[in-house]
Image (cartoon, rainbow, N blue to C red; front, side, top):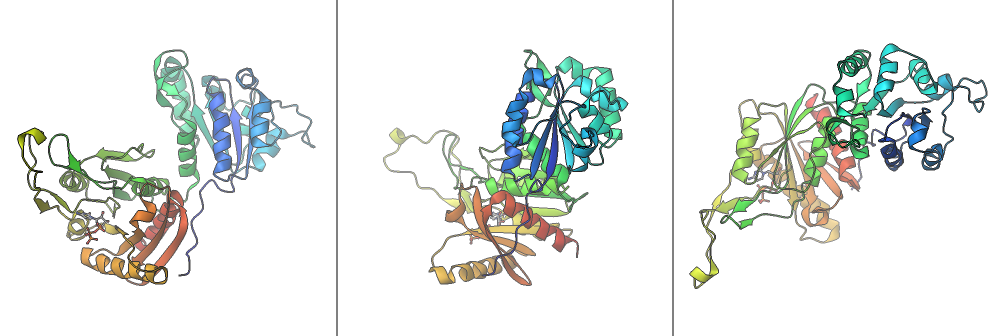
Length: 413
Ligand code: CTP
């Protein structure tokens, strides 16, 4: 089957200036630079303030970015002597991480005190800052005033996070973790295909209780659903994720509602409608035990194993798709493979087409369950009225981004 091209990571091919100012969080920026290369950024040019070099050596950034590091406005390595102009002209964006309270103040006032602040003033590319400071410094009216001024000036402010600080105090002001900064950077660069749209996503397994300690569940890890929620958020949608029990952290910027059973999932979904889009990725249990024992069922109290009777769970996707003002609905189908290799994809398409019509949805995404459960990779086949397209084996994030682009295109016609 011909394979459809995938949408690239928004960071792939990007040229970034990474500004590092004086703060203990500077060590986390080394990991950030490493992750940027892993995401296939084309280049990361580190520029450090004098204070930053007190916390971490320029040689560390030089080794990780494979580029000379700039610290000095009078650096003679740039032929025309204008590092403050040249460095930003080559960049797709500048991220200052960590951004100290002092550096935010410099930016807000438009000062050109050193190489980094001068190049920010002289830039012709977008600027983002990841503040990092003590909670009192962050809460200070002067810092909050600077933050508001920077936002009004079009600067993106990532975080800060909350938690334990290097000084031992607890509160707002921690720099976001490198993985979180990466998510925010992706959201910053990604095309806003679904700006202003509300999206509801279900993900993960459901857990159907038998008694207070036992229950029935399935092998869904939730990874595909979380990747879809993340990609929708990157594309500018306002995302609510109704999730069964998983070990995953909620994607940044996504509101997560945790549930256990299919009935709870159905109720949570209806409580968060209306939306323009509904993507049902969850592996919902089709049946639940007809009776849930309020007490633990004890072996010692019965002579034979208990017999379970089941009742049907609501079909959440079919119910939403049948609503009078139904959102654009996308279903998933994890099927098993009982054919030989040649007929495998066609058999999957046949099952998916029938399921798409049965559920009354415009788009159904099919995959082989046992190939993908718990894995970070997958391969998908998208089935709609016009036919089917195959997305090649790739990371769930890459597949989710491509799926979101396909959904956005279908929603716009
Ligand atoms: N789904 C749902 N509620 C259910 C069962 C399924 O919302 N009670 C959704 C899933 O999230 C998925 C789609 O319906 O998007 C297909 O799920 P699947 O389990 O493959 O469908 P079933 O109707 O259970 O079909 P079958 O068991 O016959 O394969």
